[in-house]
Length: 274
Image (cartoon, rainbow, N blue to C red; front, side):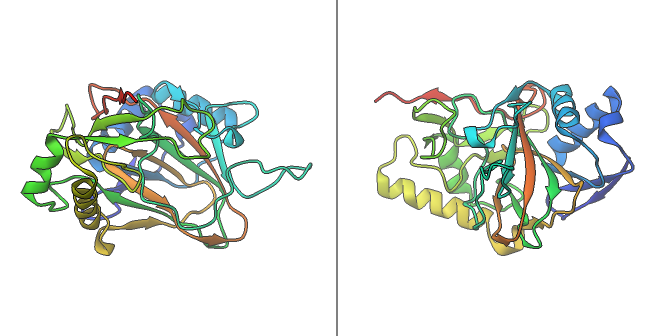
């Protein structure tokens, strides 16, 4: 495998590997790359739903999409993110085409599957990049007072109104995650964060704003412009991401994978009573 950094802070491009034919040792090396870099991009992959399911399942146990409309007809662990329609005129996937919020997948679940795959079938003719930022509080230069605050708090989340494939419960997660293998500290905070334990509404909003303004400053953003066959494997504990506005057709396939806890920082969720 040939590995090239995408930015100085996070992300690598890996070439000269066909993932569907990868060995167990190569996949183990890929996982170590994800833990170190947060985001790994592969070019020119050729995967149908069976291939994608098989590849993701080799990495770890899978979780279904939070939206029923997204599900692959043959492999419910694969979600379709697309504005395409089938022969009957029904959408094949979730059709959003506007700029999304900064988020980490599955924060609204008690036990999030924090590794994720995005695979491009049809790139948008205009726009449609997926943007990423690091949540590493040390490399991003988040101030010490905010880090100390996050370390003592839990962040609250709820499913969105269109999350029709998850329990309708409120959950909390540690606001600061620590990798068991590298010691890397990451803020588990996003636009979807509702509040923080022990803080009132105003202080929660202030802390959230402070953290996100630092993490999502323009110079810190890597925007991946998709080509057919691109595959991104990323760690939601280390990154926030969002879809950028686009025009035209677009189709990505997604899977969510439970990360091995001996390698990755995995949030320990709790259901919030009441």
